[in-house]
Length: 138
Ligand SMILES: [Zn+2]
Ligand SMILES: [Zn+2]
Image (cartoon, rainbow, N blue to C red; front, side):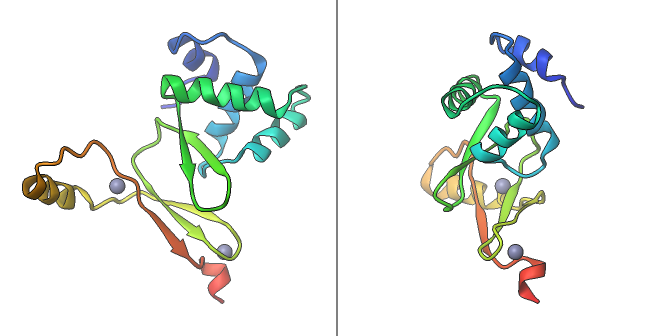
């Protein structure tokens, strides 16, 4: 179920600004994690006067309340996605840069084994796959 950006902002006790609403909108529209330049382009298209500092500030406020996750996919930049997405992993094409989500995660049994063996309490994990996408393999 999709929650409206304005409601998400309210629920997290943030101040309602046009940039916050638009950035959440953009994150909801994209199934793949987005970078700051893509966010900037979207804001420009919506005729919102903004700058990088504002975008980073908005993203920081979202990170602080846990609305978004910050990803580092070895591209020399960060990407952002909504934390409310179902648990998933990413396939990163090293040729064209395309990123795909894969939803089936079979790491729970591995987590159980690790916890049994090392008594380490695992709270979460991240796993990314790097290679060539369908188009780039041709
Ligand atoms: Zn590719
Ligand atoms: Zn997983």
